[in-house]
View: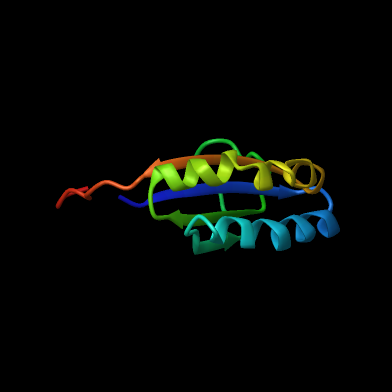
Length: 102
């Protein structure tokens, strides 16, 4: 069953963030990652604004593949770059069937 990684992002350093993106995309692709959506210019509908500027939604073939990517040595080697370039809140969800009525 597919799994989704959602990351709310606040950019701290544009150059480092772009470098992180360039490096993380090919690493994630090795684990079957596919970008689903990029949302920019967030609009808070309720709750408190946490200052993030964009959100990424990435689909992986399974939660196992998502976790393997996140725990891989290759990905861990660029975590410092991610943290220097941005503040991110990353969560993972396993897909489930959507009920007829929400």
